[in-house]
Length: 252
Image (cartoon, rainbow, N blue to C red; front, top):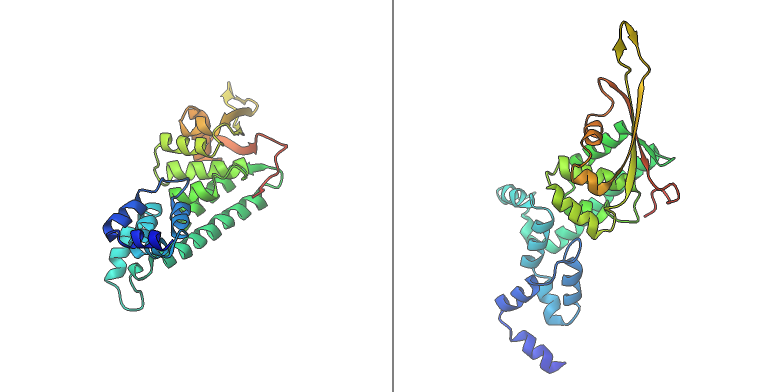
């Protein structure tokens, strides 16, 4: 052990940091690998706890932090720069994002006790994620979990594509990594009956089963339009249901 410690401590800092930075990226972040390496010895614990490592991890997970750091560096003493403690910042930020995701989960749970969700609540949940500033990796970690209800998976998918602007192929790749790409939802909507020779015909009912992967690939354009627009104009009502009635809703 003493010899091993001597070999490690003799490594130049830049080489050791390069080794740590080349850790394989595990889904959804390489943080578990960094922590595992840090538990190997005192040398690696000190290295893996360094600011530069956690600064890189934080900016990879929350890309907008670069702008925040610039603004905070020119602020007053009441707002110290993040760089004084990136590891602590990362842990604190992770817990904040976890709490925000839990709040959205609880909201959807209240709105769909029967595993069916009104489109208005669906759109509100997506907007809440935007207000809470969740990033793509936050969605991967907290909303794409296969133990979550498919309705929550769907909300995360829509948020990534329409608010974060994540390309559909990237979203599909993560859905496949999480083994939820084949999960399906049933989208039902009712359209106002058309007028014919002075008489209004009966309202039209539509129903479509779609997979998360097909929605991410934009294969179901009619369903996507209905979900994006909600219950407006000619569409009277839109309802989204979980495809598998045997699953336990909102299990974590």
